[in-house]
Each structure stands twice: as C-alpha cells, then as structure tokens.
Amino acid sequence: MKIYNKITVLAACALALSACVNLDTAPLGSTITTEQKKEVLNSDPSKISAGVSGIAAMFSQRFGGLGSGNEYHSDFGYGSIMLFTDCRGTDMIHPDTGYNWFSAAGDLSDHVYSYGQTLMFWNDLYQQIYSANLVAAGIDPETEDPLAAFYLAQALSMRAFDYFTLAQLYQFTYKGHENSPCVPLILDTNAQQCAEEGAERATVQTVYDQILADLDKSVELLTGNVTSRDDKRYVDLATVYGLRARVNLVMQNWSEAASDAQAAISASSATPLSQKEATGPGFTKSNLHNWMWAIVIAETDPVVLSGIVNWISHMGSFNYGYASVGAYRACSKLLYNNIPASDVRKTWWLDEKGGNSVLTADQLAYLKANKFPAYTQVKFDAYNSVLGQATNANDIPLMRIEEMYLIDAEATAMAGNPASGASKLQEFVKTYRNSDYTCKASTAADVQDAVWNQRRIELWGEGISYFDILRLEKGIDRRGTGFEPQWVFNVSPSDPYMIYCLPKSEIEGNPKLSDSDNNAPGEAPKPVQE
Figure 1 (cartoon, rainbow, N blue to C red):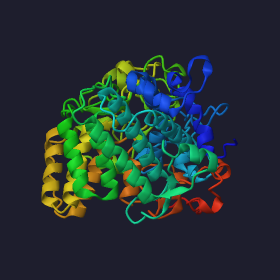
Figure 2 (figure 1 turned 180 degrees about the vertical axis):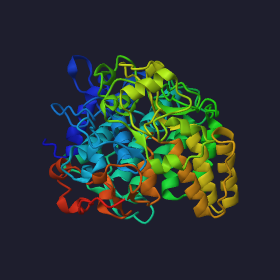
Figure 3 (figure 1 turned 90 degrees about the vertical axis):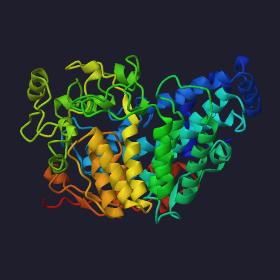
C-alpha cells in the first residue's frame, strides 16, 4: 500500500522517538492490533508511559524538524518556534549576522513555502501529533483507571497545543476567519485514512472545535484524578485550564477565557514571583514556584551535548553559545523606554548605556568583554547561574502563572466589565512588579491595550509575543525599535507575510492539496524609513 500523505510519511519518524516499542510490536516483532493495544493498556496502563514521555521529549528534539542530513543549528524543537516567532515581531531585536540562525525571521523570508522554517515548524508539530495519536488510540476514552486517564489527558492536551500553534502559524486569527482553510486535521480516529488518501485543510472553525474538544476531555479526565505528574514537562489540571484560557482568548470567548484563567489560578500551586524574586536574571529551572508547564532539559539531552544547538545558546547572554559571539537578543528600545524605572522588570535588560543596576561587577565585565550592546536581555540566566557556562541545560517556560492573571484582566474587561479588568491588572502589576503602577484605562479596548503592554514586558522571550500580534491584529511595525535598517518593516495585519505558507513538500506530497490550496505568497515587504 502506497502512503501518499507527506504529513504521515514524515511523522512516522516520531515512532522511534516515542519509545512505544512495547505497544507496537509483540514478541518476535509481530505487529499487534489496536484492540490488542487496548487490552495491554487496560491490564497495565503504565506500559504507555514511554509513549507519553516521548511526546514530551519531542519538545526539545534536536534536528527533528528537517530530517536526517539537514542539521540546522536552529532546529531544536519547540524552542525553535519560540525564537523564530519572537524574532519575527517587534520587541526582540537581533542582528543581521552570519551567526544569527534566526535571521530569516528578521527579514521575513521564512514566510516562503520552500523555506526551511515553515517545514521545520510543520514537521515538529505534526510529529508530536502523530505520537499523541498513537497514545490516544490505545486508551479507552471512557476509562476509569486514573493512570490511563492521566496518560490520555497528556496526549489530548499536547495534541490540542500543537493544533493551536499550527492554526495560528498557518492562518489568520480565529475571529473573522472561521471558514478559512487552516491545516489538515489528523486524529487517532482518521489517521489511517489520511495516510492512504491524504488530508485536505480543515476550516479554522473545525480545527478550533477539535482543540476545545481535546481540552474539555482533558479537564474531565484530570478533575479529581489522584495521579500526579513526575515533573512539569507533563500537564496537570491547572495547565489544561491555562491552555483553554489561551484558546478562548484567541476565539474572543471572553467570559470563558476569564473563567478558565481563574480556574487555572485556583487549581495551581504556582504563585507569581515577588518583586524581589523578579529582579534581575533568572528563569532557568522548571521547579520555580511560578512555572506551570515547561520543557525540562537534562544535562545528558542531545540538545545539551551538542553544545550550541539549543535554546539558551541563541538566547542567553551569560553562557557560551551563539548569542555570546554576536547573535544577541535585545529588547526594543521603544518597549524598554516605556517601562517605568520603578518596575523591577526593567532589570531584565541592559540600559541605553549598557549598564544595569542589579548585575554584579563580574556579570557586567563579562557582558562588556563579549561586546553585548545596549538593551541586551539579561532575563534568562546561565545554567546554575555559572557565568560563561558551557553546559546549556536551561529549562524553558511554556506557561507561567503570571500569564493567567493577565488573561483574566483582559478577558474580564472585554466581557463587558472594563472597570473590573483594570482593577485586576492594577492589582497584579502593583503587587508583583511595580508598586507605583496605576491602570488609567477606562474602556475595554484601552484595558486590552494596557494588558498587551504588560504581556510584552512580562512574557518577553517566552514565545508568546508574535501570537499576540496576530490575535490583536497589530501588524509588524519596527520603526524606532532598534532593528537594523534593512529589517525595519511596517507590515499591515492583513498582509500575507504575517502568516506562513504550508511547506512545499506538503503541497507536493499530499494528494488532497495543490498550490491553489496554499496561503497567498504575497510580495516581500520592503524596508521603510524610521
């Protein structure tokens, strides 16, 4: 039987990564059926734990997005998507230099359907979906076993996360585009048919309906479940509420977004960093009390053993890596100058003279010796806070509790209560970040903008900023931010270059897609005057 669908062909590589050998082969290598899998899982659900661990491990897989022989140093799992999307926007300044593996986001050439970035994103996310589908196919959705229910919730939640990411990358935001083509929807229930026949692009509405269905089921499976996660690479009930809050925020289901954010806060043991804790470098360990979900990295992981093919190599200012040889990450000077001096988060970057009031003399000397410019980020410390660290084993935040407070404030205002939304925003910032803060916004739209400003500061570098630009339809306006002249663009929110084209290989390999089914190529933006 010939397999046509490029998604499934490439995703098959994930089978080896998912470590599901016990579930996919019987003794002597005989293939077992789905029904036999279910029997195995019903008798001993722990046998699927390797598959669930494999899904989580794919968040940091090295060279998994482009396949064997294409060892791009910007290819290290979801952290790559975080950096590419942040670098695509307006608030993360990065230089046009040969050491910058994310320069395609700077000049926006990553939009083109033959470019490596769009293929990398596509493969990484669909490989993870493939592995999640394997797990979901082997567990009865009505199981009463707490461990099996926990594992199924992991698969469904991560699948929802992947489709949510794909939907935002490959089509404009939900509201107003419900009937637009999104991405192929491949589930455990239709995977074989898609493998044999290909898969068309489902509508945005259909994809979001599935995302919510997966998250709703995950909430059901985890509510009252006594199974606890080993660490924060796995989701818990609070994380799923947080994911659903994000989705409802994009869908403009304001009341539901506020309710889910509040539920996430109530269900989580996480608490925001205090003003003292948020001052200066940090953000290295998933066991921090404000982290809800994370990419957990071990010193023995391939991305770490590679030395420089990892997230903190490209992000970090205090460790060995690409950033230390010229491919730095800095804050937009417009955003930095908009942060009051009384806000502790201003210490997350160097000032306009290259100074910082909370860094040690050794830290400042290291930054000066490595020629880091003004506004360079110092939010993300080196692993174990060892200056010049060559072991790049930093964990990466996927969700922090602070985001839930910001979602609650925005969604409350947009649901029809701007005064309450403003009050919630003011209470959060005043308590945890800036004692002098006052929210003067009075309309829902003004509160939303005030929250967006806080999100730009609070979540800088955490792979969220570009998705906010898309959902709020802000466009890419880099004038006055500090980008090099050739990368200063002013792109309208509806420009085709705001989103990605489906990869060329997917169009060619999927019999249900053709060039006419792809997103509009558009015209490459031209630099504008400051």
